[in-house]
Image (tube, rainbow, N blue to C red):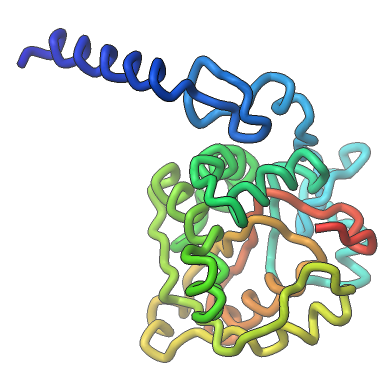
Length: 253
């Protein structure tokens, strides 16, 4: 079949599929012209995080404070990671996307989230040796059937050309769910919950890692994961999330 005929067949197939199963907005489920996308109304509700941001926490500054500027919050309580970035602020609009992926099997949402994450974390991805999704404990993974952080990491890996290495970090103990817990309790909850397997250490030592997660709330989980990677010899550990909770004391995930 020549290229022109192949293109015609592909276009016809897509048109037929759209006729039978019309594309829907991944958030509000209204009709769209294309798949894996947001309608204009839902897109405009997202609160995108734009430069300038705190170098360590990725939280937005009201004005440009110079390259490498660090917020007072990062100085008062330095994170275990080197840099964090998020695509959007966590609010009602972004929560709908996160919960759609995390709890309602809307895997197509992960592609859109990862596309926005790749834009926000371009600098982190460019310098990464590997992408490390935050692992679930085996029983939690069995119950949920998939790890949303792994899905995001796979999309990011395809977009950036960076290897996705879920084998570099293991969750070695079960922890209660973080939702609704305050910052101090979250830290105690995930303390020593992660470990780099002995067999994976050679691939961690001296390398730059990017931890991938759906949302960065108080940073307790990312801190514990970064600490494990740093203890195993990682030269740099960054964190890339879809959403950042800009007011962690008002937990509402």
